[in-house]
Length: 145
Image 1: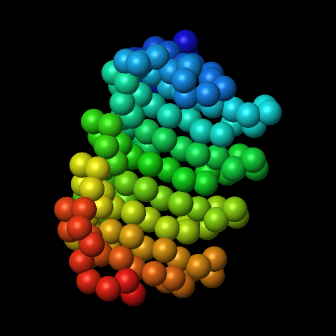
Image 2: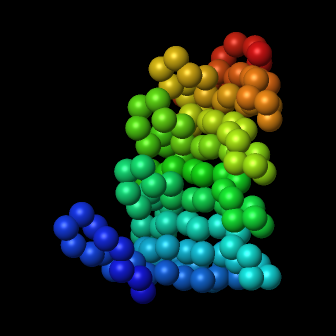
C-alpha cells in the first residue's frame, strides 16, 4: 500500500510487485510493477481488471529500459488504448536517449487519425519523419508515406 497526494487529500493505492502477469488477480484495482533481475520492466495501472489511466495525463502503462528511461507509454480508457485528450497520442515510443521515436493515436481501441495528426507517425533519431500512416476507425486509409 502506498499513499499518493490526491488534490487536497491522499489516495491509498494497492501495489503488486510481480514476476509474471499470471500473478495479477482477475479483477485487480491498483498499480502493478514488474521487474526482472532487479530492473523495473514496467508499471501498469488497473481498474477492476483492465488497464486504466490513474489520472487524466498519467499513462496506464509505462515500459522502461534498463537505464530507467521510458521506452513506451500507453494511455487506456476502459481497458482499450485511447487518446487521453484530443490531439494527444495514446501511445508514445522513445529511443534509448529519450528522443521521441513514434506516436500512435487511438479511439476506443482502434487506430484513428487525430485532427491533423496521422494515426501513426514514426521518426528517425535525428527527428526527421520516417513514416506516416492514416487510419479511420481502425481501417487503414491512403498509402504509407
